[in-house]
Amino acid sequence: MSKDRKTRGNPKHPNAVMPAPVDLVEMPESYVALLAKLKQEITQARLRTVQSANRQMILLYWQIGREILDRQGKQAWGAKVIDRLSYDLKKAFPEMSGFSPRNLKYMRKFADSWPDQEFVQRTVAHLAWGSNLTLLDKLKTPEERLWYASQTLTNGWSRDVLQIQIESGLHHRQGISQNNFPTTLPPIQSDMATQIFKDPYLFDFIGTDSPRRETELEASLLEHLEHFLLELGQGFAFVGRQVHLEVGDEDFYADLLFYHLTLRCYVVIELKMGKFNPGFVSQLNMYQTIVDEQLRHPDDKQTIGLLLVKEKNNLIVEYALAGFNKPIGVSEWQQHITQNLPDELKSSLPTIEQIERELKEEDDQ
Image (cartoon, rainbow, N blue to C red; front, side, top):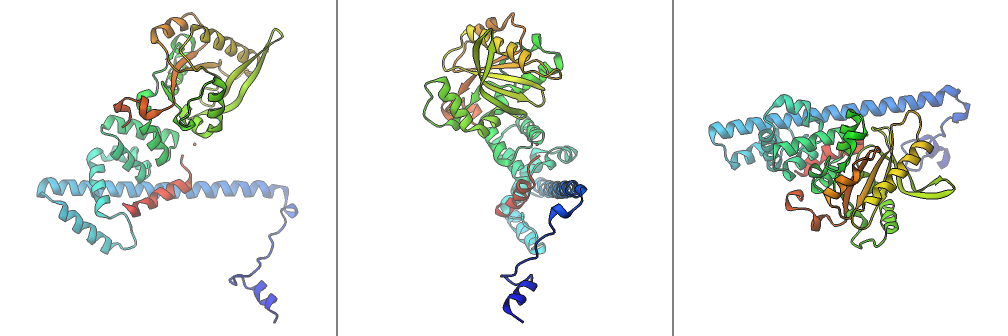
């Protein structure tokens, strides 16, 4: 038998050539739809399996941490006992990871920080262990940990994104932009919009060189669009830059146009380099009116405006917004996080690959 024939017929051979798959053109038309459906179902089942394994692991870690806490309280266990426990658990379960002395101490801290087992099962057990460690390491109060845990579950943040949001002080910035939403939007949408916008917006990702013109800032934000969308928050979809608006044979250009998937409306963003000027509100209000009349679908809610300025006087902003019937928020933007933030602020579900990676990270603990 020739070498080629031996190679071609043996799939284990390193040089083997696998038979070509049947051409999809020869399959029935419904085959492509079936394949897509099965791929989706398999992916979802795989994700559920990984998530279930993660929840069980987190609950196990909590139980181990609870046992250590109880023994330390009643029998004055010291660090040497944890070292011995780590050794014996590794010996008893060599196929399992995560029983290092360092990780056992994290389990103890985890159980101490979340004493209610039902709450753990309901909430933080749905987070990866790496994300739970970030909550323990980066935050001091139960209230902040709970807030970031809830946001992580709602927005599907990975551990890296969670850390970025903590370091940027999101908890202290979310929901505090100046706006006229209560008087221009229905109560439910007003509450949602208020929580979506923040103040200030942090643009450290555009680099250390300060933009001198609004066009430079705009270009930098779009050059780092992924980071910009992360800073804007969940639900923003980019529509366009310098969006052409024509009224009365005159041309106008909105800096940035987004659509918010939860609010179900367009969001016009205007960028300003200097201090807040009441005239900015009038300009933005006009852009919103044009978008509502020319771009808005009948099912869309009314367009929201967001004015980003380098500096503002809150009292002047309050007076400037009074009387306008279009929903407008006004916030500052900052470029250098570490220089501008006060000291207290320095303190769609993740992908299968992210979850699996974070499940394995315990090997290094």
